[in-house]
Length: 293
Length: 286
Image 1 (cartoon, chains in turn cyan, yellow):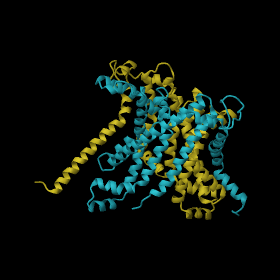
Image 2: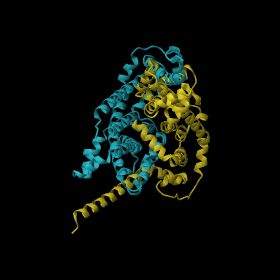
Image 3: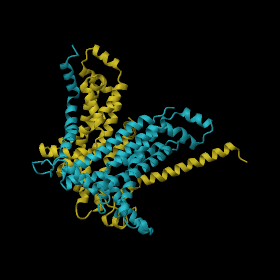
Image 4: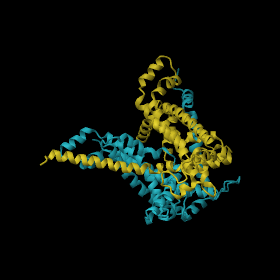
């Protein structure tokens, strides 16, 4: 059979990848392009016509102070969460690879929050912050615990950060554990013979050899924190006084609550640009930072 | 006087004990919220409000929260919806992405390169960029929202890129081309070769992709909430929200609902723990 004809190639491609191509285009590519078109129209989600408005949605995006505030808030929240998640995860990974008893049990336990959806996690912590902490504060008369942290502006942000650290640390721990395991024992032993203390071995031998784990964890946490929505919705729902509305929630509200689809989509594109920059940086830094033993 | 060796050994022992203590403290912090839910689910509403930290409420032990919560969130119906959507979405994703990865790896055609390039590039697109056009296209133009099939279609569409990427790597490294050539000599065509030789060799990757995607589908909230607006189509994450929509929240029911929402996946985790931990790690490291 001649396998170099156009019809053979087309048949083969369609047989194996035809359905995939169709679904992928219908769910990702077409909506993406259609989304670009939407930013030039004004649509309220109900009417049949979508009047063309030129760049008005982009102008509205730039003038939407609440959006830029949400973006700045998301950036601050992300920076703090990313640092804390990775510090906690690294410490956990170090502890569960240092040969203590039951380390597999601990690994499995720290991972549990990742099994459960953000909505449920947010509601659980809402109960913890609103009821359990307050009750504890009243019982022991600890002042800063006796009112709910979720009721204050900074408190709500702090709560979001705590929940994010709790949620992601176990997952990142697994990646760091894989990193620790990939450092060969020969190198560690050589360092010990040369007189390195445990601490020195970690700082000068393990960490440089685990750079790819760090890059991976950092970018995973950055993108996850930046696009946070589920926990934001169930834990704070933007309260108090819209002070904890993150960028993703603002986009959702603009489009679906205030029925301004064009502006919502224009704001979503700003998020896309941020994500694209982060993605390109990840590939670039990831390639540069690799060290071999 | 103790020797240097003895001193070092004693120090190592102390550090070991400190490590275990630190681990235990961290562990308690990690599971504390879950423990709270479990102890409060067996109390009546008044007891939870008056003392959420007590192990047993003043009015004693109650199981009443479970049937009430199950009733209110239509637990079994939501469970069936979630299960049906998760299983079908995962199955379609696995089959389609493995087939696609195979044709892409084994042929240097332009269409393959273009599709793969688009898929890789699309992985940086956040969901928020696509949700408004999706609602607009599928709701406004086609009018197919409020069907489980639409949600499955979208789930598959979103997860194909990553899954194809992972199968691409697996076929490149784990499937020897000599095996396929042998199959060809024995009279298999490409379709038979794929299903009889290649697909069975991909088992570890199939497990990884299945675990990652099934967990993502089961827990997903935003996309289902946009697609499924009818009560009888609700999945479990959407159903847990019902308890907060009304004027007063019955906290006892909320506790039961949260526990019910977590239970299926926790039970699976007890049995498949090793595979889940391995799957998630190897999925992230790729």
